[in-house]
Length: 311
Figure (cartoon, rainbow, N blue to C red):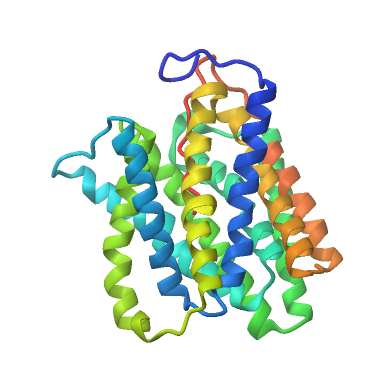
């Protein structure tokens, strides 16, 4: 049983298909960011993506009969979540992908499960990591060293700073995942719409001041890629993941996080002709292995669904 009293079962063929679809949707976001960021600056890209995702999720909210919370302290928490899950990581991710390949960005964002477990271990007494989980965290961080270390060997001013920006984005998302636990009384779709709405409120004036988006010369192909990014690359994977949480629980649903870096690398190689160095591929293997080990904790019979708040 999960925390909502729903029976948790083994992965069926349909569940496996949902895991693959969710990973493919979210993994594709790195590809579309790489296409759009050539014409749309990072702040405006983050703003447009959040607006599209917000309206898509709001439609789902309305069709599902849910409502956003009324005025109160909960909106302060939703605002912080919006900053940590959308504003900060999306700007950093978009800026980083100006300088590094989309596949590499996906690999570094693959550290989110490891970082989330580490933060939860430090902040919550009931989220202690086992010896195996701690070893997994060490393996995952070794993968980060492999990935980022190549920047030192090449152009430290470009690659290293971009890699660190991506790692900062992953850290922001992981911290939000831990913070979201305190808002667990909200339905997942309400949490998603509320945090996206808060992000839109912050990003619109920031985009106006920083980029003056009305002066940008954006091709229709980039507009199309941006629409796909906001729907297929943002709203869709979140909705699928929430469904997986209800069907199979947080542990099995976390398989999505292990597949995302692989999807990002494959799509970058196929559609953008990216060829990553062996250090990056070795780092990806270590990060995925580390994320798997970190998740091998002894859990109680009631496996509470965690919030998945990646961009």
